Image 1 (tube, one colour):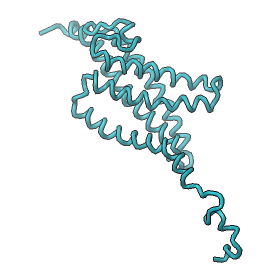
Image 2 (cartoon, rainbow, N blue to C red):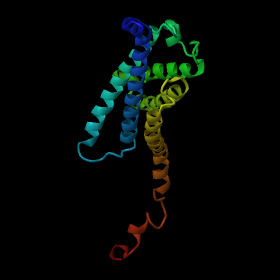
Image 3 (cartoon, rainbow, N blue to C red):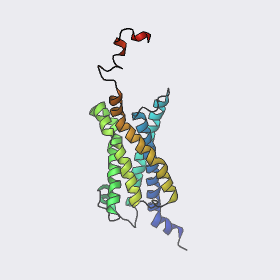
Length: 206
């Protein structure tokens, strides 16, 4: 049997990177889902927006930390041996460069969008909110990275996780994008019978 130290030395970095990558995916999923719920104003119970905001911020920060650990531990993997450039420069890693490159872009974009929260006053709240909408791109890039380069992509539990989380997030995203258009479309137009009902003589008594 191989010495336990040899096993840890050859697989420890990979296991740490794999675990932190999975944790990052879970945290990003939760953070994005809550962010879409708040943006769509689906949580209107008293006190709920404040609770969701706290969870959203904490999962986002924890997700950034997990992404950083995922990249740092990947550098130490003796089998991949990507080097710093392989982790930081998209599509430069020899192992499945397309999918690992998408993961690199997702990580960099997540860092930029996440840390921009603390500089939102400099950007302006309105401009920052528009930029923050790109967080959904991080999620979909992370999914693509997981399916294309992840060791657990074919695992049954991973398929179930994606099946249970991706459709709701996609539905929330579609609702978030279409809600303003639907509100404008359903708004009574000036001069219509509905908008002028209050001006019809005797209409109040009917």
